[in-house]
Image (cartoon, rainbow, N blue to C red; front, side, top):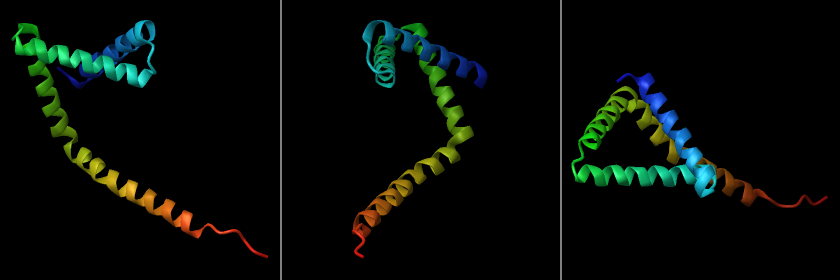
Length: 107
């Protein structure tokens, strides 16, 4: 399956999850979509344990997709993950400098 088809499937699932959240659950959008995605993932895992044919094929498709994404974007993901601690430490150092250097100006 091509990357375009995968993107279309993910956008469609996102829209369906968003509709279910808005119509029936009523949580804030990111939280509701995450909860529904977690429940669907658990259902897929449980069905995979029962070896339902369609679910086994879907799990194999997901494995191939993840491997493809890692092959294509792996170095960029590692660079992005490496940048997170650097960004957080830079922000923390900036906050600490601002808090220590704060003093009212005396004329």
